[in-house]
Length: 322
Image 1 (cartoon, one colour):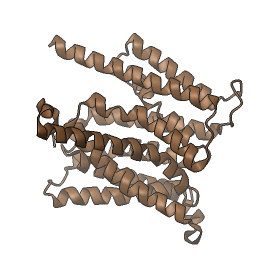
Image 2 (image 1 turned 180 degrees about the vertical axis):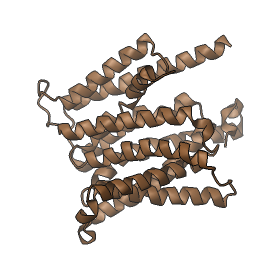
Image 3 (image 1 turned 30 degrees about the vertical axis):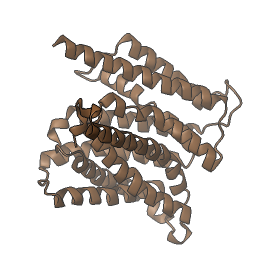
Image 4 (image 1 turned 135 degrees about the vertical axis):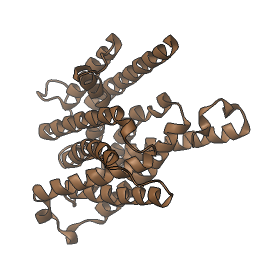
């Protein structure tokens, strides 16, 4: 799976790998960009935490069983702990809050606010013990990005005349982005404690995160609000799509890309996903694209590009120093 990483792209096999890389990138661009709209459709008639837990538990079981059948050794308790903590931050705190918030907030708005996650990563990394101090360019990126978030939410209705964004839903999405950033940093710092196979790690994270989502759904009384007879076909189709495409196929593509393509290229999904979500929300759910949406999209996506460019410039600089 890592054969696409060298200079063989100029030969015929490399050309085939290059085509596969772009197909895999296109898959995660479209699939992960469309999951926000799919979540909106799914939570129309399915309680959000139970919906998310179903998606994660089914996908996690499939990925875990797939890896074990393929002969991957059983994870150790320490590996379960590292993957489980990451899964709780990413899936219970992150995905769970997104699913809950999309009862109140348009999918395009949700995608843009979650698109601010790299800004949170810079902030969390800066304040945690032993973290990475941001460069001046990254600080500018964070300020520009959060300006875009403020314009998008427009809490005091001082800018534009777009539809009002539900403040509680927006706060939940900001918290989701924060949880995702904490989970991402924890996962990065504890990478060596997890299995070397990304799909096995993803399956473990989904199983633990899915169990957490199930517990949250139970605590918040969602079983009492679940009416199987009233679940719409659109919600069922969306849930199946999220499970198969969002949580299995896209993760398989992403895991393969991590070994086959340069990391900065793989990271471009962070720029493209919000754009795909905004377009699909407008085309398929008649979500408005107003001036606030356009300005905030440009600021948030531009800030993420700036931050990632600065980050990789620093990484390359450190490598050259050695």
